[in-house]
Image (tube, rainbow, N blue to C red; front, side, top):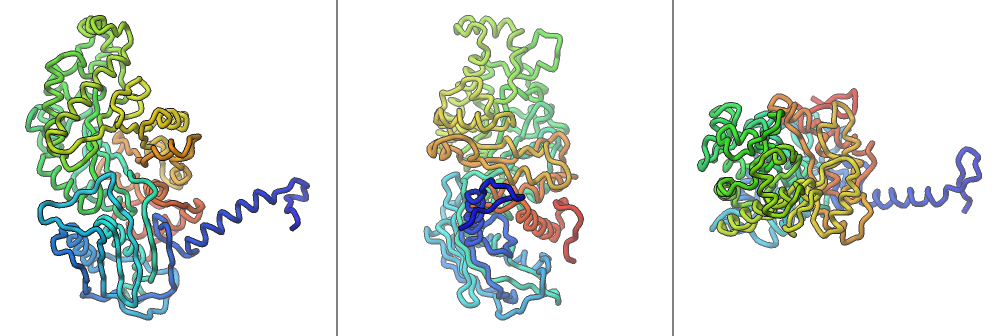
Amino acid sequence: MNEMTLHNSSIPVFVFMTRYILLFTLISLIIPHCLTLIPIPKKYSLTDDYCTVNEPFVIHEYYPACITMKEAIRKFIKRIHEEEFPKPKSIPDVSCEFRIISIRINGGCNESEGVLWPSNSTDESYSVEFEGNTLLITSTEVWGILHGLETVFQHIYTDEYGGKIIQKFTLDDSPRFSHRGIMLDTAKHFLTIGEMQKFIDAMAMVKMNVLHWHITDTESFPYVSSTYPELSDKGAYHPKAYVYQRNEIVDLLEYSRLRGIRIIPEFDTPAHTQSWGNGYPDVLTPCHTEDEEGNQILGPVNPTNLTFIHNLYHEILSVFSANNHIHLGGDDVDFTCWQSNPDITNFMQEKQFDTDYPQLENYYMEQLVEIVESSSLKSGSAMVPIVWQDVYQDGFRLARDMIIQVYKSDEWKKSVDAITRAGFKVLISSCWNFSDVSLGDDWRAFYECDPLDFEGSPGQQALVIGGEGVIPGDHVDDSNLMLVSWPQAAAIAEQLWSQERTSTDDFGDRLSELRCRMRKRNWDVQPVNGPGFCSV
């Protein structure tokens, strides 16, 4: 075979071209050229056959006590009846009628003694195939059925007469990572429950499964605590209008559960706690500095504060008891205030910490982790802590099961290498910060970020359990949450779900269709590829 050359150069490129051709040949064996699905399935076959979608549906399922599945089917039928769908790019021939759905859950589903909750060890695999005119969805657990139904929606179109048609397909699918999330910040700007539900629906469309809820921060404390009610009475933007009552949180947890999504709460300490002090000033460290802004950090040495934290977290864990993770924060700890306080400096000498203030932070984190562990065990389910990477970088190592969330953009690959080398699990957020995204095609950088793109052994890579997009609340509220986040967040979803990805241009085409499907649901989501339109 002759060597290929570029611009009459004698430099051989055969090796490079061969690798390029092999890569895209392998991908093309799995991914049809006319694929519009996001995220890409593991194995997928798309036919040219279309069926009309006719109601009423005949449902074949054998799980009378599976509340989650029955609710999913109810929503499925309701959405087909009420939603609009895009038109296909060309008018297809319709050769069959689709109105029979058969559900198989190989592991069974019995919720007669309590509903099931998704977890980090959930089996989300599923398969979909047409057997004649019957759509068969098979999974090990009920959560795979939810993914299968969402996949079906992305194959439904509207024909030229306004009827609904579905393109027949077969697939076998499972996720690349178990943790596929987005962080929402409700402290800098309040987000209503309704807007958060809409956001959760968008996550479910692209098979994301974790909503990291950054509930409190320096600016406000919107969580209504029954143990310490003045936290929200004096710490929220408004004690009635801009707070989350317990019943609202419980309803949101159930809403997300029915979509296979876990909600992980974050009450960030010891920094970012100035709003806590509005109601309970004694929990903050008195600062003897000219900068009053420094007076926003918890006091780590007062035994009364540990009791306060214990009681508050005991309540929090009871509200979020179905979860097996909690985010403890730990970022941006400024030691200036601690350094100015004589009680703390005396404590440092007693503990022989000298002037090692990161060691004092580690002392606080050790107490906090012990509080969480003891409280969660009393509630019957052990909580695994998640912390921001600052906690690890400041030297805390005692909680061997803790998960480190890497969010800093500078040299994140080196950070992941060091943390996994030390044996800790990692979540990646460094290249998925929505503060860095503007209108247009900035989603491309999201799509090109691979969580495993660091120098590490297979054992280290196995410790990367997934990642999260991060949406800071500085400039985000109900008016623009969907606009700034969707559909570009789907780029993160595909990186975290799909074993193989395509070119950014191919993904951009699929992203445009996803955007149109979201617009059909009356969501305010932005164009992603310049001039264009969605079919009417």
